[in-house]
Each structure stands twice: as structure tokens, then as C-alpha cells.
Image 1 (cartoon, one colour):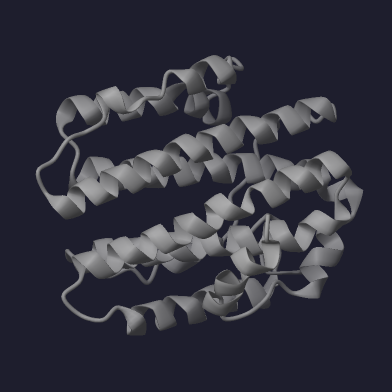
Image 2 (tube, rainbow, N blue to C red):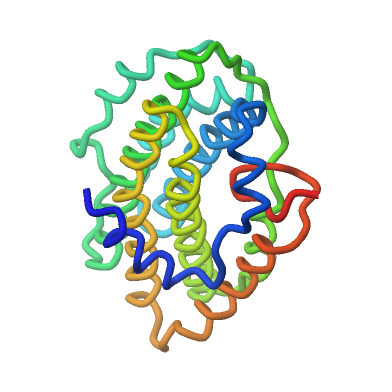
Length: 252
């Protein structure tokens, strides 16, 4: 895989690199359980975000229900002390036959890209869970970082501007994930390093999918909004942060 070629547009899109202080803390093996736990939960939240977009903007009822059913076992395990499901068996249940349907070309593009994203994020979720189990790291609930909330605070409140802004936020979250996987990979054990580098291609594609959908739904050039959210994102990443998480700022 050509990592520099995959990363180049991501690094160009983000307005700042991950601070060295975050990398220094993240490479400390004592912080690996926390990072893997947060990474796993972030994968589920990414799937939930994609699901909400499909349900709110295009899904027919049966397709929306099918998507909800996909996520339920993951949500029950992660947020409600539910049993650990058979993630491999769950993953095999995900197929296009029950997908939401629409006659709207943009809506179909949203469904196609978001359903693929959901499938990939849930796959990554159980890959992270496998990595935790292999290292005897128990799953313990943790609080969320300020990161996503900090960006979503600036989302406009009327459509289609709300949708455009949410898609741009999604692009930044995926791009930052991609950049952090690459920044952290050199300091991980061989198995984790291979896994994190394997995630780069999908995360890089996800951020581009979000931007493409945002521009397609907008009558105007979205560059000013991209710039605004880029500034917000860079501030969250480069300023002191009291919580250490996968998308947190400079450790205090």
C-alpha cells in the first residue's frame, strides 16, 4: 500500500498535524487500553452517524429498521452492559438485499456510501475488540471527548444547511482518524501497526465521500464551510485538553 500517496490529500485537507505531545502520550503503552477502548467506541459512533443520516434523509421504513437491527448488538454491548455478541456472525448478516431504496440519485449515493461505511466501521469495531481481547484488555466504559461535540456546536439549524455541515464534520472526523492512525502506527507492536495502517485507505475514502455528498446537496460552493470547520477542528486538536482520547487535543 502506498501510504504517502493515501495520506497526502488527508494532510492537505487538515489544517494542522497532530501535536507531538499527543503522540508522545499515545505511544506510552500504559495508555494503550484507553486508546483502543476509545477507538472501538469511535468506530461504532461513526456507524451510528452514517445510519442517522440515511434514516433521516432517505430511508424507507423497512430499510431503516434493518439498519437499526444491524447496530443493536454493538450498541447493547458498548452502551448498555449487554453480552459480547458473535461479531463475525453479525458481520455476515450485513447485505444489500435489505437496503433502503430511493429514486433520488443523490439519496442513492448517500445510501451506497453510508451503508458501505457502516459495514466497514462495524468490521473495524470488532477488529479493535479482537486486539483488546488478544492483549487481555477488558472493555470499560469511558466518557466521550470534546471533539465531535465541539464541531457539531457550529452546525446550522435549518436544512439543507444542517445536512451540509454534518457531512463536512463527518469528513473532518474521518480525515483526522486517518492521520492519527498513521502517526501512531510506528510506535505500536507489529500486529497493531499492520492493523492501523490497513485502516488508512478506508478512512481516506470516507472523508472524500462525505465531502462529495456535501457538495452535491449544496447549491453553493462549500469551501467557506470547509474552511470554517477546518479552523474549529484544528483548534480542538491543537489546544490543551483535560481528557486523553483518540481525537483529543494537547494533553494537559
